Length: 101
Image 1 (cartoon, rainbow, N blue to C red):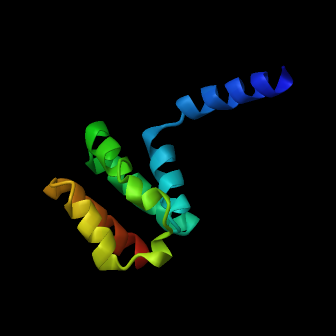
Image 2 (cartoon, rainbow, N blue to C red):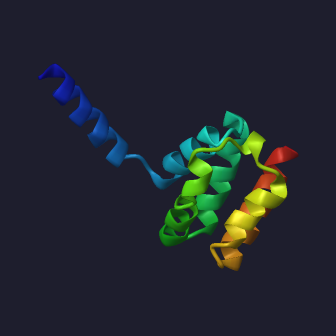
């Protein structure tokens, strides 16, 4: 019973997460440092729509891999496959700017 209550509580908290929090967590899970992920998430949520952020999050093939296992070309190929030039532009510019901060 306690486990069920705890699980429901955690589920409710996860549902309340902001798009920025979800994106930051996804980037950290993909292998980026906390500081780069925070920087990128901050830039990306201000430049992409919720639909675009969901589409970016739909890159399910990235969920099982760490960024360190992907080349930049492989990652950009997967983002490019979304066929949204704005997502590609914002993602690459955010990665570049945040990596050099």
